[in-house]
Length: 130
Image (cartoon, rainbow, N blue to C red; front, side, top):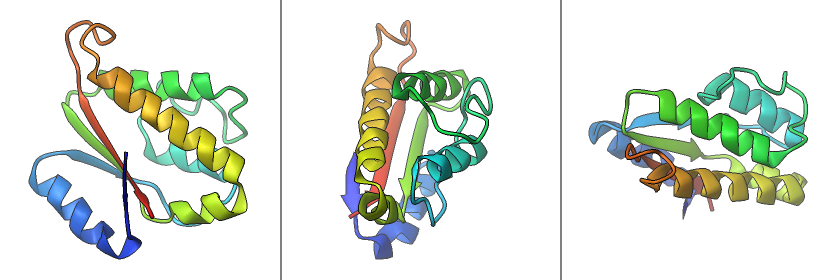
């Protein structure tokens, strides 16, 4: 999990892409759980696709699992999730913001675990606006 000023996101994205990482960029305007879910279902490789139907998540463990499964199934080995407008959610719904960060940290940790991935670990970098 990395925090950088929003003004550097273009350079951060370019660096990841230049190094061959698959990059997912969350959109601006995420201000509550429902808008996060809509963005995640549209942008992130969740498995199953649209598991929450654009509504609230209900269980952040379910979100962790859907994202983990979705990333693990992709052929790429390195991923970056960039969230240049994370401060909008942080200010408008700090509880959901904390839950999202906690979930993303779980997925980062679990994807890197050789045992959890049955010998097929992957790298996930998460970069959020500071």
